Length: 206
Image 1: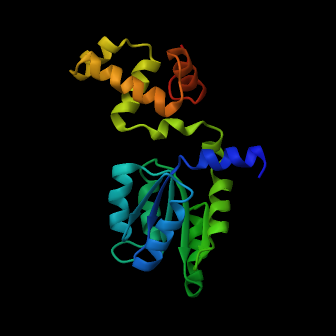
Image 2: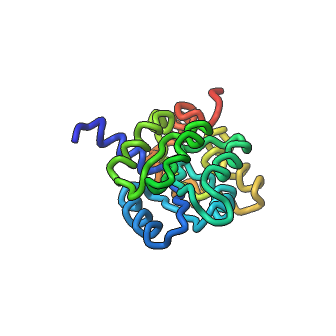
Image 3: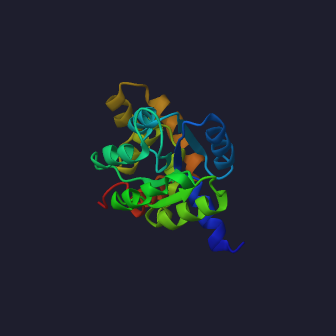
C-alpha cells in the first residue's frame, strides 16, 4: 500500500462509528469486523436506542439498518439532521426493501448498501465520504472528555495553575493530564500542541 493510503487508513481509524442494527447476528458481525478498522465502534439495537447513543457520543459515522422497530432508519436520519449534526450516514437494507432507495437519496445520506454488507465496499464508501475528516489530524479523538478540555485550555495558553483553579482541582492533577495528552498525541512541547490545535481548527489563531 502506498504511503498516502496508509495515512488515510491511519486517519480514518480515529473516527468513531455507530452501528444501528436490530438483528443480533448481523450487528455482532459488523462490530467485530469494524473494530479492526476503527478504535471506537458503538452499537444500538434500534432507532430509538440509536438516538440515545448519538446524544451521548455524537459519532462521526453512522451505519444504520432501515427496517427496524421503534424508529426506522429513514425517520432516525430525519430526526438527527434537525439537530444541526452532520455525521457520515450509511443506510443498509435487504434487496426486497429497495423502494427505500429514493427516500434515502432524498434525505441525502452518504451511501445506501444492500445486505449482506460487503465490508470492502463499506470501508470505501466511508473513505469517499470522509474527505473533511481526512483533511484533519484526528489524534485528539484519543483524549477523554476532561483531557480534551485541558488540551484546549493549554492550547489557549492557560497555565496549569489557572486550569486547576478553573476545575477546582490540584495543579498536580493538571500536570498528570498534560503528560497523558502529550503521550497520546505525541507532543514534546506546548508550542507543538498550540500549532496542532490551530492547524486543525480546534481553536482560532491568536
